Image (cartoon, rainbow, N blue to C red; front, side):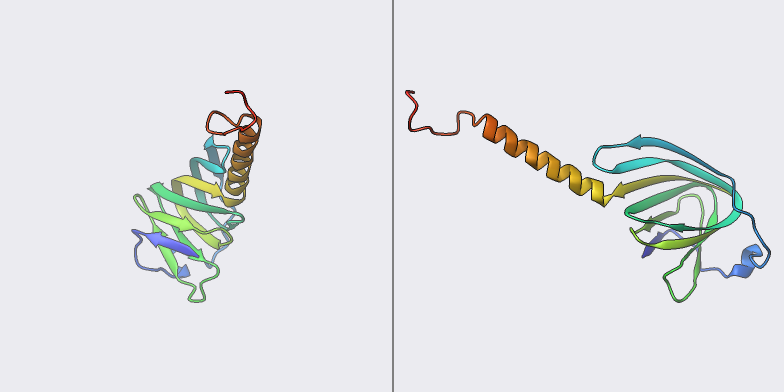
Length: 148
């Protein structure tokens, strides 16, 4: 499922001349941040082109900075195209698939969260907390055999 925010009316293939062959775009990606719990962010830009993208195990939220693109949710039977431009935001849920058409240029900020790593991080954090409690029960624990 793809959720569009601040988008224009759905478009058809004919708007950007999609009947003609378009090469894969030149893509520039810069990962600015990655945390231990599966959160990553960065910037991404692409020049003219058309491509398909699968959002595997991660949710992704994007915010368009410059340029624009038409995006189609491949799982939406209506086949509707949505145009995104500066100020638009889109949420791609894990497992969604999209077709992108970049007519000239697009630049975005992206944030992903890998739910699998987030869960693993929380489990490890809980296990460490349990291990600390076992190894150092602290003053809150009452020991009836102690001399104190």
